[in-house]
Amino acid sequence: MSPPRPPLSRDRVLEAAIQVADRGGAVAITMRRVAQELGVEAMSLYHHVANKDAILDGVVDAVFAAIKLPSADCDDWRDAIRERAYSARAVLSRHSWALGLMDSRRNPGLATLRHHNAVLGVLREAGFALPTAAHAISLIDSYISGYVLQEVNLPMTTPDDVEEVAGGLLEHLPADELPYLREMIVDHALRPGYDHTNEFGYGLDLILDALEARRKS
Image (tube, rainbow, N blue to C red):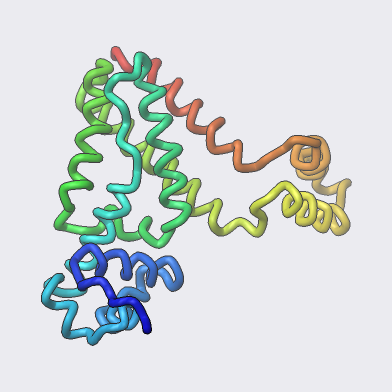
């Protein structure tokens, strides 16, 4: 005998919607598919969410809630923002479909608002003028989103993948015409210990150091 199914709730509806999106992207989120994920009729969802828009608002808020808030206790604001950036990258890598939704919803939830407030608070308490803090948030979030979007579409995820892809490229690369690209592959990408995922931290540190130079301006 199967165990009794837990009662339907808003949280369960949003969790199911996220599972649907993880497999098929945000476009896959429909009342019918979410209901199928839960093993219920679509009409039963309306007791917990008003419509599809409410589900989309809810899943975006759930994604923001999963990203670690920057700590206000760090001695260096860069450490707080760096920790939050790595958390955002990890969460968005699992739910990359959310990238197209996060800035498009008109009814942000409380977790979303708390997140933005916390990031802004770290920057303002560190001495950033309000316009500079706004620029910083836009720059950092654009970098995180762009990196995740690039990363999830790369044809390689491990050092072995890099070696396979780069090795295949070298076989057909006209070295006389493309010497700098060959140098990049041979003397950088194929060197022992190279891990393309470390590029995220390098770029992030460049951004944070550049912002530090403008913190008091």
